[in-house]
Length: 126
Image 1 (tube, helix red, strand yellow):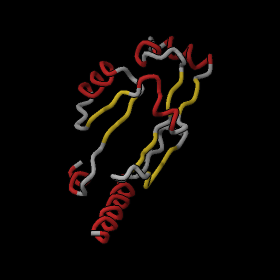
Image 2 (spheres, rainbow, N blue to C red; image 1 turned 90 degrees about the vertical axis):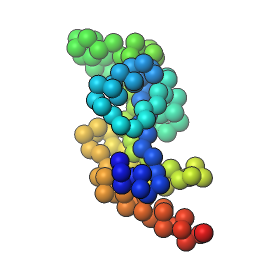
Image 3 (spheres, rainbow, N blue to C red; image 1 turned 120 degrees about the horizontal axis):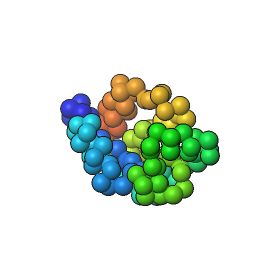
Image 4 (cartoon, one colour; image 1 turned 45 degrees about the vertical axis):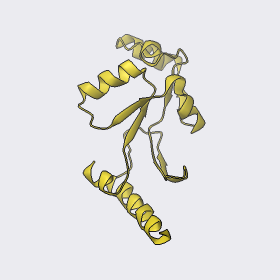
């Protein structure tokens, strides 16, 4: 976080959970950045990230006591794939990383390198 902030950027998570559930998750995990609620996966849908859970997977969730429609306030049983995006001040997406395998994430060093490049470009325009 300090390196991201030193480069003039902010880290924000976007979750399909309701605001109350997002807050509970953030507090439980001691998250130090803002977590926004994407009710109904509206933003995730715009990014093409939402996939429907198969009926068998829905049953597994229910078997574990996870009431996805209640947590997300959306009865579609859709979940977003995790993605990492660097969005410039002008709204341009400068880096996008999405992998259907939720265990694969973008290396923090790649995020920092992209932010450094964005900062260099901004400084050269000044």
